[in-house]
Image (cartoon, rainbow, N blue to C red; front, side, top):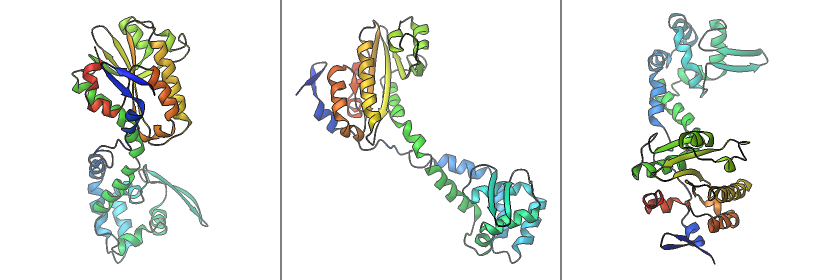
Length: 294
């Protein structure tokens, strides 16, 4: 069983891997309530106008009066159906229609048909909801949950950045985000052509940290599930680290974590055994940032 030297401490791969996390979700991962409230506030007045339709005995005529007097209320309708944007396509035996709720492109009668056939009239007239503003908040919350995938993709980057700043580095002064090799070469005069196949490929690091004597190119990722991508990542970063060792004034650093690696431990072990600077969340929590950047 091979050990990796970290300063005066020897690291055991299996012990290191055993501390990988199942999740990296922070408190702000689940719902962006600021965004939810902001989106609803933008149409709050219009929603309150439509609230007058709740329990209406003559909802079609009341709806027509509102649309004629306040046509801007139509802009609220897509959200009531959990649709982003201002256009909705619908078809049945009576034909196909592409409704525009920002600029009316059909008669009020046709919009009444839409409200009836989608069930919105029934929901509003029969008190299935008591307040359209509250209902819209609920819909926005549901729609925002779909954004978790996008938020999740940046969570490891965000976490690493917090530890970089905690170590005293300042963005755009002593550390930089999403920096291409060509920009690194121009800024500090380092030849990184071996990392980009002599300029044939464009390589971008998630972060670059600059100290007095060294430039650190940093990659970050977190995997909750397995797959071939993990093996490819481990192999490519192992090769990248080998090329980087030959470059004076440059060091490659990889922060990774996630239980997905447990199904690809073989390739990760190989990279761990030859790469000097590969770290996990546990390493960051134990202050590796303060000892790494010299």
